[in-house]
Image (cartoon, rainbow, N blue to C red; front, side, top):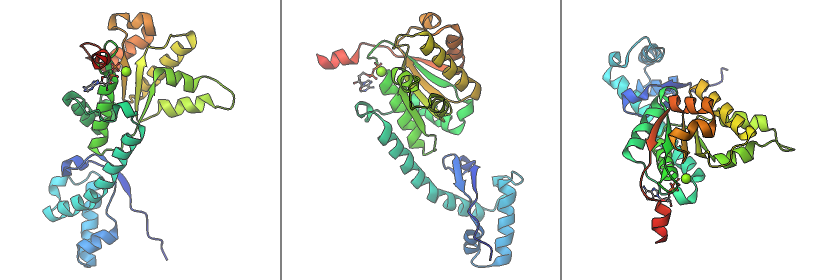
Length: 262
Ligand SMILES: Nc1ncnc2c1ncn2[C@@H]1O[C@H](COP(=O)(O)OP(=O)(O)O)[C@@H](O)[C@H]1O
Ligand SMILES: [Mg+2]
């Protein structure tokens, strides 16, 4: 007896169906047979047409309306589960102080773009003095990413913790740790340049930024270093890559922490 095959999971351009992008389990023959009310000949024909569609040989517009509805219903069932996973990931990883951060409109727009085209969306670089809301803005953007329901799982570190985490020490395979971070689908590094740079931290920063740059992987970075001082602070190689790979957002205003203390 043939085992029942696993439903195929494919990256589907579900946006055309009004659903978030991502990997979906396609309808299996059993689903199609149900839809065809048990009519094998009809199910075979629909199955063939859907295969043509998923292999790029039949545009959505050429599927029959009832086939599109069937497909949408089948995929929609998977959206709710995935959205819940994304919101759970956010809730589990956001620091308590920023748990209520909501996205600025520009951040929500960025989140939409980055989930649709992670390799073609520039990273965000939030620049501004201490207390202007950079970290808050970044977590708002990460919430917006979660709210799209696209499984673009993120990893976040303050630069200081990142260096602490990667520092060679016994019992830890630093290179494996580094590889996990450098390949994260979306990486948030907070407060670049806040920790004093040594030759070692400068080299790690360069490797990290350059590897992410080469892989076209998106990120969010924050710093209170002024753009004019990037080269001095991070070195010319990092400064130039950050400038090319990021949209810079200037955070202005007074230190919100001082206001809160008044
Ligand atoms: N848009 C905002 N709405 C409400 N509180 C904010 C907002 N932006 C920042 N804050 C609060 O102000 C304080 C400083 O913001 P933070 O993001 O930590 O600043 P930065 O990272 O620039 O030093 C934090 O307590 C943060 O929760
Ligand atoms: Mg901060």
